[in-house]
Each structure stands twice: as C-alpha cells, then as structure tokens.
Image (cartoon, rainbow, N blue to C red):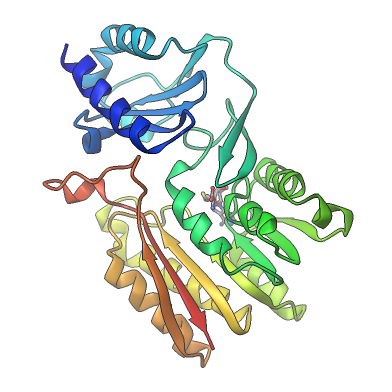
Length: 318
Ligand code: SAH
C-alpha cells in the first residue's frame, strides 16, 4: 500500500505537467522511495533498484507497476555499483518484450537511444530543460556537443537551426546514435554533410579541434560524474577545471558556453567559479545567462540536499 500510494503520487505529479508518458517516474528519495529509480519510455519501463531494502520489495513493486501502468516490458537494470555494496546481483533481468532501441520525444525532437546496452537507463531525461535552454543560442552557429552520449544537446541545437553539429564521446555507439539523431532532427544538416562525430577521449579531441583551428558559436560540455565520492573531490574538480578551460578555448568571440555537472559533491557555486576561471584563462568576459538544475521529474526533497545533483550554467563569452 505504501509503494502504491507513493508511486501514485509520483505519477500524478508527472501527469500534471507532461503530455506524453516519457519521463522519470520515480527519483528515489525525491519521490520518497529510497533506492528506486523508474524511467518511463511509453509502454516500456526501466527500473533501477539500488538498495537491499528495495530489492526485498521487488515482487510488490512489480505488482504495483503492473497495475498502475500495464507496461509492455520492464528492464530491471541491475548494473549499478551500489548493488555490489548492498550484496545484490548485477545481472540485468528482462521482463516482456524489451525493445532494442528507445524512441524518445523531447522538446519537439525525437531521439533514438540504445535500451539494453545504454548508459544509465538509456536516456538522460535530467537534461531535458537545459537542452531546450541551450538550443535557444544555436540558430546559425556551429555547435560542439562534448560528452554527447546520444546527442541530446547537439540534436536539439540541430533542430533549432545550427549550421553544423560536432559530437564528441568515448563510446562509438554513443557517437553513432548522436549523428543519427542530429540527422533525424535536422535532415538539412545531413544533406549538407554538416554532422560529424568524433569518438575518443574528450580532452584529446578538444586539443585536436583547437589545433585544427576549429571554433564554435555554441559549446555544450556535459561530463560524466568526475566526483563519485567525496574523497575524489579534489581530483574531480581538477578534471572539471581542465575540461571547462579547453571547452571555452574553442568558442569564437561572442560564443555561448553551456557547462554542466552531475556530481553532487561539486556545488553550483564551485562550478560557477570554474566557468569564471575558464573565461579568465582564455581572456574572455563571461556573463551568465542561465543557471539551471534538474527538471520537475527529478524532484529535490527539501530535507535531503543529496537529491540535488545536476547543475547547468549558460554563459556568453565575449
Ligand atoms: N550530454 C549527454 C549525457 C552525457 S553522459 C546527454 O545530454 O544525454 C557522459 C558521456 O561521457 C557518456 O556518453 C560517456 O560515454 C562519455 N565519456 C566518459 N568519459 C569520457 C571521455 N574521457 N571522453 C569522452 N567521452 C567520455
């Protein structure tokens, strides 16, 4: 009954502000269900259970999800580091007809993403609003999407009128999806051969683009969590510092920089400081145009600051 009531509350909140069933249905403590993340992709659900306590309720959870949503399939995505700490199995468990690929509508675009081999739950819903904000600066400029995964930022920018889009990611699968998604959302760019993917280490790729003299009007930087645990804070902060400086160096004068961090242990004020430092290092005047975080399907519990993790600054660099 508790699971049902809390998931009903979560669902009602989503149905209040989304017109299609594509969202994070449950954001752990943010929805008062510790250890449980549920992403909804139409008829398909991806569920992550991160604690032994929630695992013990798996059967009841399955019943509640079935009766609330009648999903065609559920992927129990168990490939989480926290599961090892909790002594839980890491093998995925597929129920029903789990699709190979997700097709996600977002901000007027459509994105394909790998479902079974994807990262996290397949699609990063948390950047939905920040992608739309970033795309407001895309019209007529060359766009660089660093740590692109399936191209959420660059694909949205492509549809918003970018003159070219370049993606960087260490995963070839991610780069292939990003290129496909940009072409799908802006066929004119594909026709003009203006969508490019670079597979490799982002730091090396940024150096390479700089040496080639490439400059961009919009650069989006959305690294993986460089600080996973508090003890990694200093080392992780150095990686953010370096990535921000290299990214700003690739901006043409008057370019717009989007800097994100999903590390809970990097406070927003620290990221803002790194953006300022990157501007100073590159002899730019940086002006913040937008400061964002998580969208409404990733609620932050007022009494649990740990449920806040995502930061996004958009800055004009003269
Ligand atoms: N911006 C994406 C999400 C990025 S997730 C979106 O909007 O959906 C972080 C991505 O960084 C992953 O796709 C991962 O493959 C990639 N990655 C991790 N380390 C990397 C590295 N050193 N160089 C390039 N890409 C890396």
